[in-house]
Length: 142
Image 1 (cartoon, rainbow, N blue to C red):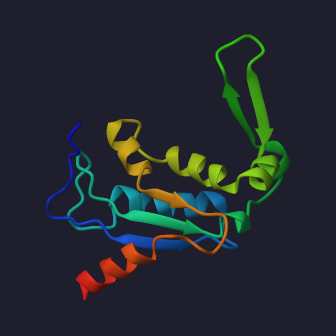
Image 2: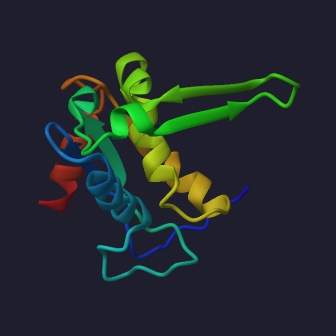
């Protein structure tokens, strides 16, 4: 499958530290970067967004009673196959999934949206293995 990208927009690598930030607000910021809406060359039918690296996912913050009340559901397709977890459990076991789920809901529901979510890299701690890409992007833009 050929990827339709905007020839005028070269993707950059951006690092977003989510320590102490609210889940929904940071998810909307990340989705804008993935879609490329911050660029002057944005068009909705081409992939012109950036790569986004999210660090410190385990230190994300939610407001209100969302830790107990917000539920995530999975259904296997079989009878009795409905699994549910609250946000507190998801953040304890795999905090990357909570952020990915929130961002994915804000992206287009199409092939283009699937390509965009593929450019999202999420890590629970402060370290990530993408230093070379960030340094290469900084060297070419200078």
